[in-house]
Amino acid sequence: MTNTLRLQTNLNCHACVAAVKRYLDGDPSISRWEVDIGVPEKTLKVQGDSVSIDNVKAALAKAGFKVLGEISDQSPDQALPITYYPLALLVTLLVGVVCLVELGASSFAWERAMRNFMGGFFVAFAFFKLLDLRGFADSYQMYDVVARRFWGYAYVYPFIELLLGAAYLTGFQSAATNFATIVVMSVSSVGVIQSLLAKRKIRCACLGTVFNLPMSAVTLVEDVLMIVMATLMLFSATHWLQAVAS
Image (spheres, rainbow, N blue to C red):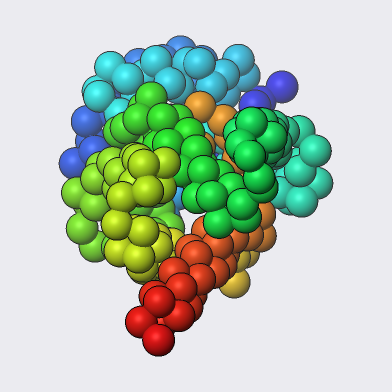
């Protein structure tokens, strides 16, 4: 029985395809293959009686390229209970840590709680992205409006998150940090919205390449949540400064 695999890759041009040709042609498990570099996923379609993802990964690796994930016909919403478990667990742990910090304080402060949550959020998400920076950059360039035009931005983005996380956790320049968060996350959400409207089945790069999270409305909720929290804290700080000035 012939197996057919549809894989997302980082084969960006015809030269890339030419570089992997001899390795794919030389694999006895592959009877037919083709690459569509005209789509954001850079889809590699492979057929063969005994072909597997591991075979294809090994072939591409010989030429210095990667398989970023399998393209499935399954709806992201159908896979939600399984694929979003790591994300749900991470957010739950962050909320738990913030609650423990507040319990140890003399009184509960919403602004401090939000600041610590956002700081932990950005640091944790940056950590997962930095585990495979190149893999993250390849995935992020598939949908982010800035990274598509300036490839270096995809490599810088995890460090931006790391700096924002450090700023929130230390309370450094609160107004500037919140404003920067609103700008960064608003720009990020544009690419997410475009992908959702186009109903593209691609990987969400929010947790890097460690977990295979599909792009869905959950991704947009993450960005919007950060924008809303940063806006609330920015408004709160501005209101406090006005009260002091009066």
